[in-house]
Length: 166
Image 1 (cartoon, rainbow, N blue to C red):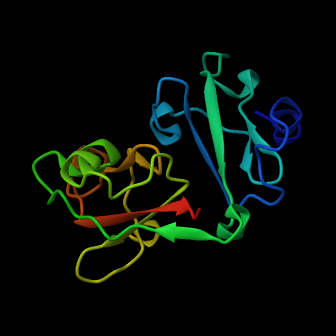
Image 2: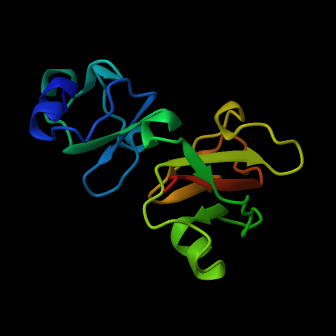
């Protein structure tokens, strides 16, 4: 999923200077859960998984998406309110877009472009929490599974979504 090739195949659909790359299998599995050796995953080159680096000599089929700076939306991003629908349970903390839309109709745009998540109470960004996320993207939301954590316990998160302002 080389960035130059993706730009050629999707003209005008990838911003000039992406700020982040999101990678998952075409079935929605997180990159970390595949256990594959990744050659490259960055905002300048894109994503490269080489068959020769894998023990079974075969990469999984992946898809990528890029985050763009809020200014790419023209006037910037408009952010939703913060949502905290779930407290960590025996399975984890599930702040999914579908559940949040069901609980808060018409409060989240149709196509969120960004997601932010922080720890409830401290507002520490999720990216600095040290936890592994099963999902953390604007199309699914945030899913922290207890089983993916070393201490087998997720923190409590709240999320908000960024949309292009009209």
